[in-house]
Length: 141
Image 1 (cartoon, rainbow, N blue to C red):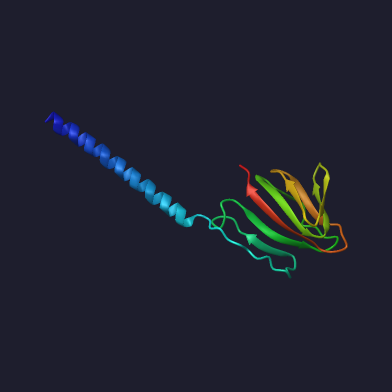
Image 2: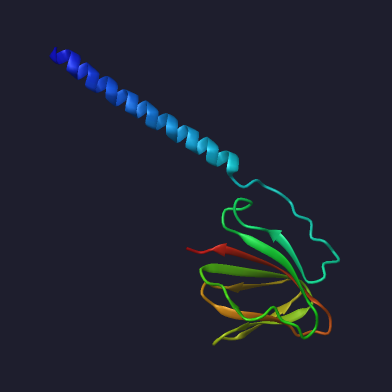
């Protein structure tokens, strides 16, 4: 009788372990099916002011990005990165990233600017031609 009880305990433990293992496999396969996929996005050449490039989850893990076109003298408006860090990849034109309480960063074609989390800033087109850039933000926490 005692061996039967021990056997039942071991069998019950094995069944629970198998169920937990099966649950983990099912969950990981489900997550893999919904995981972001590699892709290429073509930037439309005649964008007027904005084009979404990456829309965030589930398309990416945490990234969002877009193509921004600013006419001379225009800005995107002061905003805060909150818990995101941001990179600007400047494609053409000239401008400034105005950091509240910090330096103005010069932007020009083929340059990259970085803005850390929790930073209020604005981007302004200071040149005589359009400023065109791609921003990329990702959760930093």
